[in-house]
Length: 477
Ligand SMILES: Nc1ncnc2c1ncn2[C@@H]1O[C@H](COP(=O)(O)OP(=O)(O)O)[C@@H](O)[C@H]1O
Ligand SMILES: Cc1ncc(COP(=O)(O)OP(=O)(O)O)c(N)n1
Image (cartoon, rainbow, N blue to C red):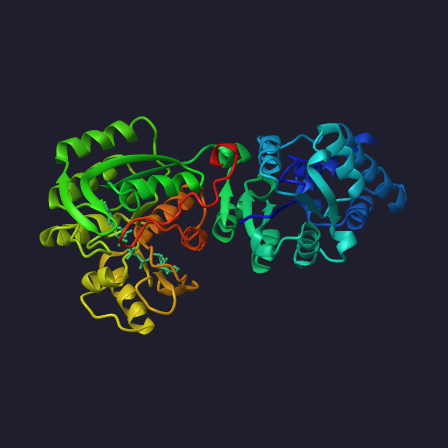
């Protein structure tokens, strides 16, 4: 759960990085000298003192460096006081965080005075309880001090705190210190964008893009008891902040004790649903759950390719906890060859991973070996879920030759109907919102732990979880 947010200023909230490239040219122009074409880049990495020394020597100026420095500082100060604009969508983002009762601070390498002047003019001072500067923190943003001091002030731990940044060294520092980092594009650091995208938990071109409601589509079967399948997926997507859509593969007559009937839709009708949804509201992520027959799998594969679907999470549902089979034997082969290679990640539980890897899983070492085998066979990231273990809830991600454990505390709750559907839908929701795969899994596990810990107890068998455990507000009472 997010309990605080820390914002950088220049390049993040303000579209102000240009002044630091432009200030030397402006200064020289003010004394009637034309600057060399590349002066902005030459001065960009220098301190103001170094820059003043450079222009004095290079342009044979009679002014002392102290005077040049002061004139440059005045130009910068005037810029913040009168001109520095907000980045697009910044106010909407601040408003949204304030409405969610998330306290916010500033962490900036700039001077407090400049920030205060700009914030007052732009009417955004009201969003921030305090401004932290690198000068006061005693270190620049290659060290985590400023973020840690800001988080301590907010009363949130790093993992509960969002850091908004636009430059790679700051993104790296905050990430390394355990914060959740949102990276944003800025012209001044355009050459580092790919790296920022890789290192940050979430990345966006501008704040409006981050604010836009993200969408997710579930292609799965209906569970009449509401704990698994389409119903669990939609509740999960809603609770994880995305707009949920569905294409139903089958109706099941099901409750917490078992499945008493399955009625599949025709491939034509599934195709119809997929076309209707995707051509109108494009999903930012797709989750695929129960698909019981070869024909339906082929339809999904064809349609998702045709529509260039992204962020596909495949939960290779085979058997429900209650013991009922949810896929035909021959469809498993088609699932392997047609759907797995399209997936950003697949989420088999231990029995499903055993079928896909064609080996027994008895230990954590076996989980790694099976996930590696599946990854090499089908070229997709594999999250082997450990919910069927007795003592823990440790899941293993295998991708790009690397195994990463997501360790979870086992919650003593016998009502685990729909855990697989819920986890895969939460991962898809997080991918839709732009989180990296690792962060998407991490957040999905936190969500499922919360839903299990709410201890809902319904039905005669293994009951459903409380998907809405964190949905509060006046209509929730
Ligand atoms: N009792 C539990 N406590 C905490 N997490 C659990 C528990 N049971 C399952 N999980 C988690 O729920 C997710 C779904 O896992 P699993 O139950 O193995 O899937 P499936 O429902 O497909 O069999 C995994 O992240 C797993 O670690
Ligand atoms: C319609 C439908 N789809 C999938 C499942 C399996 O759900 P899962 O999340 O794996 O949960 P359990 O049934 O294993 O608890 C289902 N039962 N029905």
